[in-house]
Image (cartoon, rainbow, N blue to C red; front, side, top):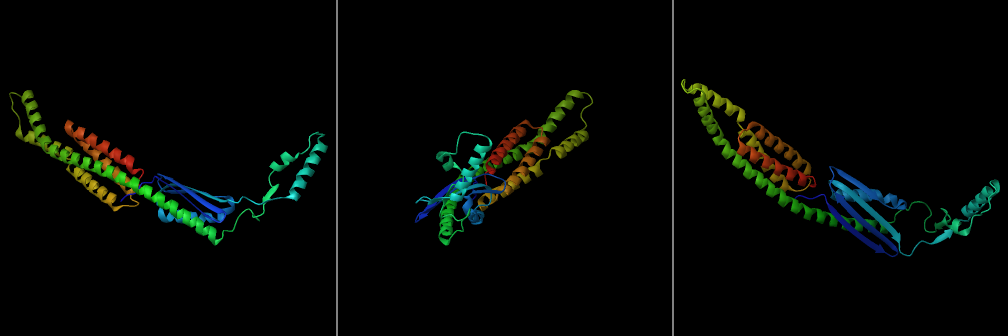
Length: 294
């Protein structure tokens, strides 16, 4: 089964006053493009987040938002040294520039560093075993939601792609059937035209055979049809094989497009041209879908 690159998952868990919440969004991308947002004080947990994502997801842009907070609220204290520094700086500025206003309490309380969390002795936290376990539990649950969604999207993609593969296969068989009668139709038209141009002298059978043989060599599309059918078989096999096949499928589509273009350039038959254009349209539909295959 193939997997889509579109997914979404969330999870959260709580122990005592600590809550860990995870949100993951994924969309299509050529490679694994991972972006993690985590509180700065818990930055040491980011490698664990990266490792867990890479264990499950192979391709796509992945945005992970990690939120960690305390339900009891922070226990704040005043930083007296910093407050005195603010007041002294305000006094000097007022004296030097002969200003009337002073630093009031409302403004002082908004200045950075006036309050500090007693529970935070530094700008970062050394995560304990409990917090790490909570993070891994929430990450695993959120990633599993993402994987389930990507699997469901992949099922829909697989169904659509197999339908287009069948359509291209039918068109290829129709082209092969019609290609067999092209030479005979060309020989008849050529013979009729020569009869009109040379009513008295007659037609040289040898020269007519040479012209038909020359056209047969130039317009032979049997090899292109064989390769196209082979690509269709390989494509169907990769779709059924499952994970991480998007790049291979994209390469096969390029080869299928090449064969279709060659068939159109070689044939002068209007019906084959019409079918060949329809084949290219189906290939483009496949190309749109494969952009979201992992």
